[in-house]
Image 1 (cartoon, helix red, strand yellow):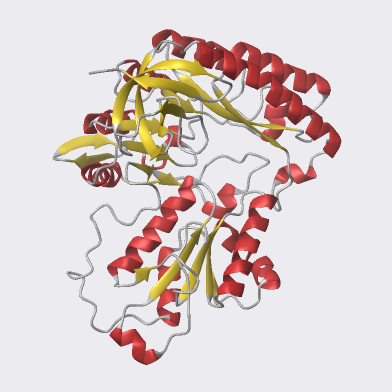
Image 2 (cartoon, rainbow, N blue to C red; image 1 turned 180 degrees about the vertical axis):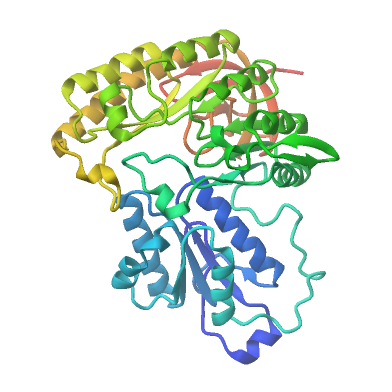
Length: 456
């Protein structure tokens, strides 16, 4: 089971004698991971055990992803595996908005709910595995930070749900709704609990981090007895006071992003921005209905790096979007050369059910998409490798993720978990996950660094 917990036959008499056991499979992006953590926390608060195998579980919850067709297929496969191995399956998450498709493929699932419908998922578990009559919350204590699926030393901090944009290739607003920001006091309270539990890195996530608080008109809230506006800048300032790494994901290049760059330059936030540019050619950006065009973006990147020279920019792009010509693609490659982004992912355009882009003219043949994807990756790989070479000899701080027989493996400010590179410390086996250490970079390739610990 992936990030899971699983099931076996169960009797009504057992329900009052021993806690119900729930298996969990969590798929999709970090935002879905947070949804899973909230469901698991509620179940543990009610006395359920979360178990790591299908055989042990009384019921299995599969939290699905429905963003692109390949993710939907992975979700359907996971549901099928859980049904085969266990038989009692509750489906939740983004693909849950397509209940008919799920039930057509797997008619025996017990229930189907969409994203953020935590109460409905928990109620569905109640129907299959009734609550313990004598559950004592003081016996089965849940830690104040809740149940998490990430390692102990880092955690995702979700600040909002939904999105106000209408990008033509995306169906997130139809799945997760319009932007709904969490009150900043709630966000900061959660962050503080996570840090008190040992978290060394907070990864701020949402569909649009730059727009945080817009829906609340930047309402004034309170945290730790002081007023804080529900806005990205004030949130970042408050998070920076907690003494841990703070990393911003899913940031749109609005003018207000300029305000957080000085915090990065001062060492209060990690100098790292995850900005989904998606393309650079004006015609394609317009067809995508992207909220920020490229005309001023290069100038702003240059300005950001003047203020914060060590700024790392990660992004994702789509090639083969309907109507993309060879000229458009070459424009994108030239833009990459000038932008000098550090970390880049690329996807071949894939139609998504319900996305307006499906109706656009001039679809790009699959063989052309593949060719452009390969050329894009080769082009960016040279840029990334050259930028990593500049770090040779630098002293940097590294957060250790794991230690094995070869040494310690960590990440620098430039590396988000699972999507970016690693820093290898060969022979360093005295370190522990969650340690933050100073190292000197000794070697670099296209994606990763090698380093040695700097003696204290």
